[in-house]
Amino acid sequence: MKLFECQNCGQPLYFENTVCESCGHRLGYIPDMNTVSALEPEGDQWRALASSGQLYRFCQNAELDACNWLIPSDHTETHCAACRHNRTIPNLADAENMARYRKLEMAKHHLFYTMIKLKLPLKNRIDDPQGGLAFDFLSDQVDANGNVTTVLTGHDEGLITINVAEADDAEREKRRTQMGEPYRTLLGHFRHEIGHYFWDKIVRDCGEEALEKCRAVFGDEREDYGQALQRHYNTGAPPDWQNNFVSTYATAHPWEDFAETWAHYLHIVDTLETARSFGIKVRPRIKLGHELEAQVDFDPHKANNIDELIENWLPLTYAVNALNRSMGQPDFYPFILSPAVIAKLGYMHELTH
Image (cartoon, rainbow, N blue to C red; front, side, top):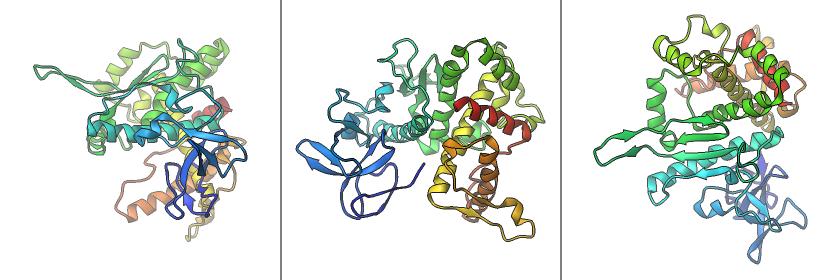
């Protein structure tokens, strides 16, 4: 994620900001320009200081304080490029659901920021009723007898389901602990599940050659998925899993290995862009510190190869893990990238480009 600034006063801005805390200007994100812009009202529309001439209006979800994206005023859509992918949202009359929904949208918009920058195909169910991308944000249901029907987060032919309980920090931490995961975030869920969607779009649907290339890296996805998951939950990951996989869940089935690796590729690209925006340099003051030096001065979305990303990512994670530990927080990036995992990340880099 890049660092933004107010075009009126120069105040640093976050991607999610809706008002400049310095000068009070209303703010909105313009996807086509990849910028958060200060706005000035013009009738019932807005003029963006980052754009000359074009008038905008807000996505309809701005009324719910769930979106700050803009739509050109001459477009007919009522929802922005990210919100048009929603199929089902929770009952927002429930205050708890409203708070969770806003967190879900924040994470989803962050996801779309990266998808748009990587120029990946993002048709919705209106553009492509059969194969378009859509989201269901659902809650567990309790019947009159107190029986609970649990919503499972997952993907099915372009439909991504997220249990809104994942937006509750305490509940998500409880599930993370129960499942023995070192890392579990809303944004991580979105990145993982959309990895399944892009496996369909840019592997499966691109012919046998693309499939065979993927199988050579991740294994044969024709292995029975249900049996593979059951085996994983019964016996867990193999003892040497870190030699070949980025996480224990990646060992369950080639589809999950692909989705986990995809998510980590997005973690790396997006975080390195943030480091670049802040001009971060890493120069450890130890005898072998030169081996951990990094200066993120390139656009990670346009990196030439995976080595360019990893050479900067590893020193950055060492440094930020140390900072987190100094604050008594868990490691920022609690994963080991073995040569085999880096090779899988290299496959992702080639695939997305």
